[in-house]
Length: 395
Image (cartoon, rainbow, N blue to C red):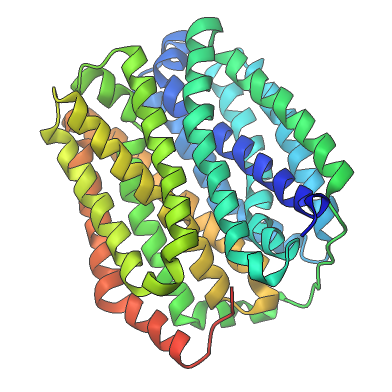
């Protein structure tokens, strides 16, 4: 493929970067935002929860409403809406104004993540489909490598509002790029509301959704409060917390490379392995307090597994769903993923209020290991049966 043919995928990857950076940047700024508005860290963490619940609730209705709109205008409108509400987040003068602005960003998120993966595979040749998904995963990892630490550094140096303004500025440039290079991609519009029961009767697809919501709940029980955990429980400095977030993101790039190189031939082993090692890494956080090297090693393992999980869950959703229902299936996947984020941040807040921030890793691991058992004992057998009988899409 010529370089110009890669430009739409590059534009999508940059969009993935800014959407991920925006969604998770409050994780690294919880303390600053809480101090500014005079709220507790657990209350401020609800900004993450409400954002996620908005995505969970709105993803499917929005995609059903927009099912006949072609993908290019849908993509551009999502990025434009994101830009406007990102700016409003930066000028928020109260906790509730910030909450409302974040929900506006969440609506744009609902549409973007419903179409991002189907668009990524639609703008490249068939032989590059898996590569396109892994490139988008790199966008997620780079957001964690540069985005979260950079957002945190900007927030500490210039105030948390400037972090949101910086994302708004990058999103303006991204919108210009997408307007210039993204092709018309027709939306077949053949999926109707009457076919929704077909989605719910798809046992593999529903099983993938169950795996997602259980694992993501566990992951974000810990990740939503990783900043106060590293600061208060582990006793790290602000600079060391930034290093830990960077290690998490760098390891994610390794995860995306593993997906590209190994997923096809190790598919039925790597899915449960990712869940198992994620659970074990979070469980060990409480045992690594005071040991900086071990903490960094656990952050690396955790980050690699998380990125692998994200791209695996997208891949398995697209394989299991009817071809013309991919955006609807992905909207459900995005909604369920964000229900897990919201549930996890709520569970983490409860753990902090009733116990202490030291315990979030152990509680998180319970969910991750439950997802592992479900996947290992039931789901992976169904996925294998689908693959062997040709009842899945090729990617």
